[in-house]
Length: 325
Ligand code: ACO
Image (cartoon, rainbow, N blue to C red; front, side, top):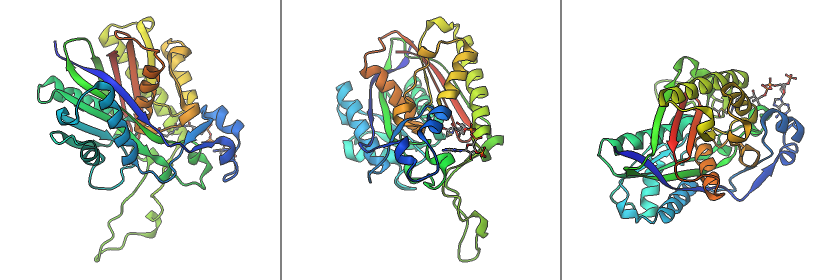
């Protein structure tokens, strides 16, 4: 049986660290409020580096760790909502910088679920035999799309990138998955409205300020706890896997309280539901691969361990994958 297996992981985050106390100097907030409501203590914020910088460094790292040369890469997929440009894609910029001259390269956008969608797409290309390997990356510079005067959103996000090099394998790899979308809720989380102003039409003024992240936090919270739990339950059931067989749940790092609820509802212990939002905040599509890389670098996972990756985000979208590490 052919599967897709993660061979190596990598990550790149800005060096500049902004603490909750730093934020309390620019908006009316406090370390106590942010810690209690979100579990976030610090976040790494760009000092001028754009998203391609993080994506390129992550790609270099995963290739080096996999000991694969750039010319042998078949496919590069980058998930992001904060690319440097509308076009070209980040993936094409990565391709050029690492010299992956034979690769196909494109971006996907499923907001914070982006890495799950990108990994799923890579998996299909590999399983159908079209390509044998891929670099899959989630990369974001969310600091450029949050309103730093809005305390309800600016405290939540961080910048950075994580990724993996994946390959066709006859060992176990991606075992089960589910992707989902609930477009009827699209307006609870939006960013970057681009109007239709042109020489013959002027966009109404009220849409002028829709560049920044705009979110109904409570509605997102409700969606996340419901959709993610149900999705994990379905994936575990269809795989015939019990909670005690899972080594780690690798959840999107939006909010520690969301992870607590998921852990309780599923009966999977808190220690197994890994979290590092205290250090990085919510890095959207980068959060799941940053966690994977941390687990890998710390030696907390071994080949054969079962991991449940699960993300949710704007759209609203979600994606869950059971993998054998
Ligand atoms: N500091 C201090 N007070 C604040 C802050 C802040 N940074 N932000 C909001 N408040 C205030 C509000 O103004 C409000 O005050 P009021 O009662 O006087 O009106 C009070 O705190 C409560 O605000 P709520 O928005 O109701 O707070 P809540 O407990 O819902 O927490 C939060 C907000 C953290 C955003 C929560 O709703 C949440 O985590 N939602 C999930 C959304 C999420 O994770 N989004 C991440 C991005 S989306 C994604 O990753 C898919």
